[in-house]
Length: 594
Image (cartoon, rainbow, N blue to C red; front, top):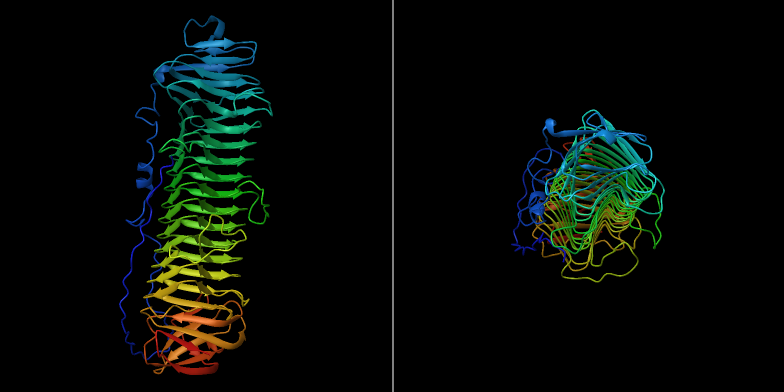
């Protein structure tokens, strides 16, 4: 049974109708009302942060003393194709215990718990750990090189727990061949495995996987480079990365867990580190949860966003989990043939930096997405952010989409052809943040309800009339923030009349060219909007607390403007009039102008 999180609770919002009062001004500066673009903060109390999420999973096998040893206890082992020395003594003359040897096949087996330092090389051999002792086996890789043509070069067959140390200022290497049988990984452990140290490890996996632990795997530190025919790093029960510099090039998945039957297992937890992952399939894939607290990630999956996948293609996502994804504060650079961040359940992001190029969706969750801060540049996607429930509490967003920029609908693969019915269960909450959308389809498409209480939203929407900058099925109530949505006029929708903040629904007589300035000022000459859409448009939706009931306004097109221009929006400047399109009086919650 999968251990699922309760990440979000839907809150009922009581809206009180309030009539706003305008502010006198003697300047011609354009204003957009108050909004907060702060990307800081932590995950809300209604959700789960990385530490809380980790607490809900089974504790790891890590314990005090794992990453230290007494140098007096170290047994030195120097490998060689023709001879092996133990503590400076030839193996045949060594009188101590703890080893067995198959000289014909160059196999050295460690049979007792202890601390062993491996150096030298096997050109075609194997080191095996097989002990029934209750104590931990500690293996120091001290510049050792082991290649094996028919099995795993380093095989932890039996031990209570094994810890592999990467000796300081050394590079060790493990490699196998394109064989037909044997253990599936170059470094393979049938028990709990930990890796640590300040040295480096190179893994060349020509058969299948790079590093595999049939139970739990912990990477505490070290520099690891893996080139694998199939998966890079796999932990059956869990993978925990405390720190490290890890590079994975894989013909399968980069990081992968494989336990969806035991409660609290099948997760991946990353606390810190630097990751460069280039894979044919998923970059980081967990059968239950992915929890990422910190780190720098570059993930390329499936050949990148320009690769067109067929219906029978394998999954080629950047990060994928079946139950939940929780991210607190990380830096990501995605280039993926499929979704960049995907979860069959829930996603919660507290903060971070995301650069996304996706062949399918930028961020997708079947159940819910909650975003509380961070910087998001989705420069290519089919749909930018997609789920059945999306809550945005903060962050800076620049979303470019071939279809919908933000999409709220039911189903498990919204990008596939098909229809999605309206539902009272589909919600988009915008409570804060700075959101800019450039879409060929709907800018914001919700098969249910939109509730906006704050933030700044700018949409440069579709130019085709079969889509709209704003598209919702049930209702859209706005009580705060600023909304500017430009696009085609065929399906344009403004916020609903149950809103407590006033909106303008402007439809021009014909399409206006990209870059045409739209300026709105009140009867005192104070500008409340100066905006130049980046695409041709015929419709403009504008809502702000600067719109006052029963007040007169003037609408201009063209002209020029000075001041700060960000994403088409001018602030702190002066507008030089173009053409007066018309004047109007705000007569209701939504004023239609054509």
